[in-house]
Image (cartoon, rainbow, N blue to C red):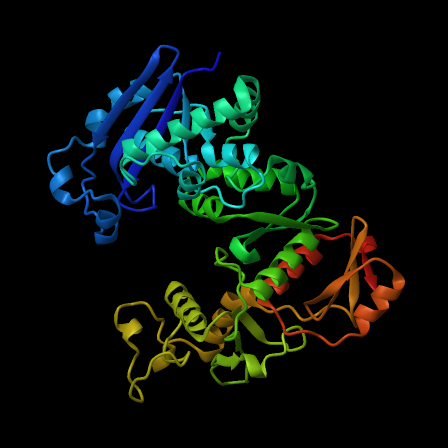
Length: 457
């Protein structure tokens, strides 16, 4: 005997469950004794966008006197308790309702059945499983499309059609499998996830037409991939990924270092839609400081064209943009009472103090109250933590990690090798453009790696 099923649909002001709000909830409960309907408009406490009003027909006049979610929360919770939560693209409906309960401090953890996944499992011969396709394919009776109770009724019709065509035992088996893995997105098969090794590497989520959606890395890829989908119920970004992901690829690496470098390269190569960090920087720059006797040390901003990181000494920082470099220098000056005039960040008339001195945030090197030598020493001390490390090897090296060897030179990643021939080929290739993210990865890794894992080439 099936547990009680609650076919649920909601209408909302948008797709952001942490920002948008529910405007209508419709529930059809299927029990042994029959069918029960529950529906309510919900005052979202915010505006309903014009395009949403046109889609659903729900406008501000309709919800003005409707109860808030808080007012119906306990009745709704009782209506859904001890039932399987059934919805189309269930992650969306469940995510909104769960987030709404959470804002009130209420727990909501039912078993969830997605009818998109059910359709894919029972009708794999069809390419599309959205609700409009199912309506057209099976001639379902539409009473009120894009209204909560009307769409919930379509799900009930689809369920009954599946029951008639496949029988109780097949449906029971599919429901058991799908509710066990309810955290998976509707387009991702459990068998695909099971093929992902729980080992170090990089995974790639694809949207429609094999467009890269998100690239990530982990020392336990399968576990990390599943955590994306589990977090989608409470995290806006993860939900957006889960709703769009259609396929997954992965590349194993020898360990964490290889995964970090490969992830950085792939993100810059493919520019996935959902990756924000690790984008290639065209405006890389650094401060160069070369002290001169009896003269103030004035930092010089060196642009990408003049940079040879790993070869040049007296470089400090490495920044993604000129603005970031100047903001860093200004923040350090203020924190350590360095003179903005002496640093070239502020201008003043000859013999007059800088503004910072007037508010007691400069020790007065600008008017001779602090020695040039002391100001230079303070500047050098403050910037020591930002010093760009010169490449410490005479040429390229290989880093051993598991069964892999990564060839790097002058803080640049040249590629992975499996044998001596590939090592030689990679070490003789030209040096690629300097990449700040790879530099940070290698600088940290080489500082702690034992010498027997580093091979000079």
